[in-house]
Image (cartoon, rainbow, N blue to C red; front, side, top):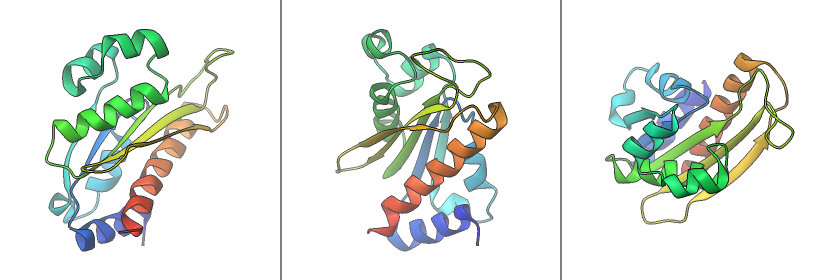
Length: 158
């Protein structure tokens, strides 16, 4: 059973509906979920908000948060995940924003990805993971897998 298949099994069992809010993963989390037949029973929608303008327009991320912390921050990931909850029928959302590469900076190196997990009626969790300079495809894949793990972990405790 793949990670996505296990996630869908748990979501069905919990009666959960999932949405994604993705930047650096560019829809890969939503694609991994919707690759599975029957995913429409538990997957509502995916937001791919690559630009800051899209984060603001589609998810309600505040310009002030982007200015204060930058797009690659837990603060923005939290607003993305909570925005996905507010703009969907989902009960559980995950957000990704990071530096896939190539490049980065001393303060925000390649491979840094911020995640947030929000659930209706519950607290929002956030974390930053340093995947390292694995190359663009490697960072995006690692972030996708981690996002699936976060969703699975949230459903496994229900």
